[in-house]
Image 1: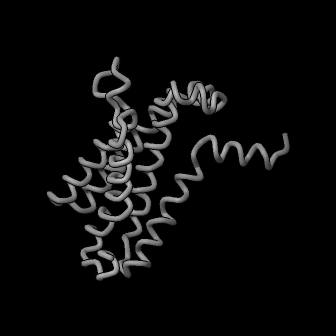
Image 2: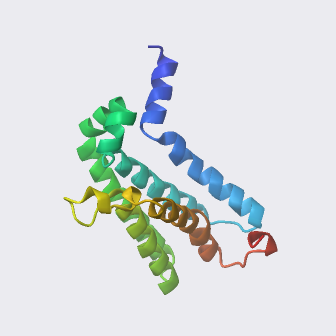
Length: 170
């Protein structure tokens, strides 16, 4: 296997392509809405997305056995490191969000985002894998859409302290 192929495989395996798209999407929204997002928010949201993507790697066992067994083996080998990363990264993201702007609205949005991110991959009852949001028909799509919208659009919009122009509502 060539070095380039190994690099691309590691890039995709570790979901870097999804994680890297986060600041690009935020920047596009910022430009479209003519609303500058704070630089720290790019870091906070990208870190949050990284935690969710990596957490997903160790919770999709049934699906990944069928769809991408090599990815599953890699994730299982790294599961302890992935869990530490997710908990540490999630904690850092929440602390940064609340310390840099401690408002009730933001705390509510962060709590909503943390709950959606966690329960998208994890069940509130460990023996009931079917209770995670990702396993529920329609709820999967609604929750991921709500989470992405809250994180990539509403969170930085609240923190920029500007009102969206009419283009936002069209």
